[in-house]
Amino acid sequence: MLSRTGLLAAADVARWREAVASLDRDVSDAERVDQLRALEELKAAAAAAQARIAVDLEASQLQAQASAGVPAARRGRGIGARVALARRESPARGGRLLGLGKALVTEMPHTLAALSLGVINEWRATLLVRESACLSVADRAVFDAEVAADPAALAGLGERRLVARAKQVAYRLDAAAVVARAARASNERCVSLRPAPETMTYLTGLLPVTQGVGVYAALTRVADALRAQGDARSRGQIMADTLVERVTGQAHAEDVPIEVHLVMTERTLLGGDDEPAQIPGYGTIPAELARQLINDRTQHPDTTQGAGGQDTAGGTDTGSTAGRPDTGATAGGQPVPRSSGAPMSRVSGDDDGAGTGKADSAVLLWLRRLFTAPTTGQLIAMDSRRRTAPPGLARFIDARDQTCRTPWCDAPIRHRDHITAHADGGATTATNLEGLCEACNYAKQAPGWHARTITENEHARAETDHPRRAGPEPDIDQRAGPETGRARRAGLDLGLGLDIDQRAGPDPGHVVETTTPTGHRYTSSAPPLPGHRDSPRQPATAPPTTPPAKTDSPVERLLADYIRAA
Image 1 (cartoon, rainbow, N blue to C red):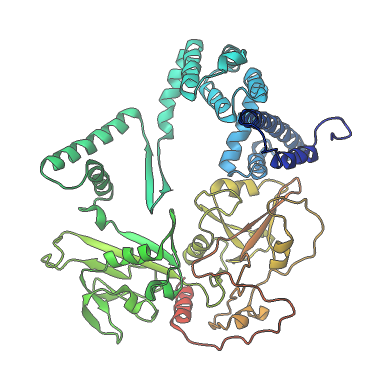
Image 2 (cartoon, helix red, strand yellow):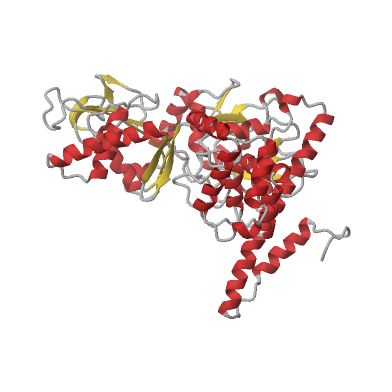
């Protein structure tokens, strides 16, 4: 059913989506193949429609911002982020999708037509846009006509053949532009890190071809030489170890210093619990592996602060003092406060190398622990009177949010941004701060963007998967403090005037609601922390439970000490 204008509206497309979900499955194999092809062509046509819609959105928003008096230099900010949120993509991806749409709609009509017909998919359209990006508008129009004017010529082309054809045409149209583009590509050199299966990582370097080949050749020569001398490691293992050693300056790859932020209960560190830990920049690792990382770096003779404040020789036992914030391991013969963020134990060989076989090695083990409050699954709140988050609070936000809090954005945290702006009276507290990547933070500065923390009940009403339009809502009191009684309900009183978020069970925890200029709302919850186990929520009519008795546990003392130091 079409809208009153006779054209498709969002509701019509939504009904299509529902109809596709009930596609007939009791058909012949030939019909199944036809269904697959028809759906693939529908996906491509939908991508073409999204490109047109994104371009129309940008044009409309630019006009609205100009009418509102937004300076020309700031117009367009945040539009790509809105495209990303609507398409459930990261803001960086949203910006690229908007750029793709502008190129297709305004400069490459033949490629857009091929996409609309389902002859090519969105990725192959992206390849054609990428390979023609260095051309002038006039040359790009010629490129588009020559490569994509005949849809039949695109049929059957794989990605490599399509790119080869595109490069050939682009070079013929403007060889100088193609060469200049290759020269500028060196400016995009970078190094990236992303998780791999089985607690491994991909460390990727984008380098100019001569440098990349040179690095690989040097690693290959070392591996071949060591293998010829009888080294039992595989060629790939030697190359990987050599890379680590040369980049870090360590004599042995396994001696690289490691800083592990373990957001966990004391059960994981001391009691053999299976709750996983988190490593910033990587993600979740098994609890056993986290303990092994610590154990591997604390098995050499060293001196640690004993239970009675006396230095005792022997193997360093990280767990032996993990629950006592009032004691510290020694670093260079001096006790180090547990909450200072300084090295908590220096693990090195004896002066003569006895017992380690590595007299020149010195492995630093840093532990900065943030424990979750008992029964809550939430970290203790921290606050500051400064506009910018101090280091302790910044680390707290990083540990709580882990990655950028914008929905569908997994970028590393670069900014700790005020949810309620500091200029509007927003406090520099854990409740009023969220971790954002640089792009998302700048997008929020565009006119019409608003954010706020919301309560548990409001979050339960929010339709996260189907963003709703903004409307009048009752005000919520976002103030935090001991008057809320949440710290008392948690049975945890640190005597610091701090608020403990007591929510437990399936509660979403710290929730931020972002409203875009078009009135769409998106909610984002901080990821669940280690030690937070969902429990069945009691019915509203259930009698209140007796709060646990106040204790002076090692965890509470650690939290108090950590916050004072921060």
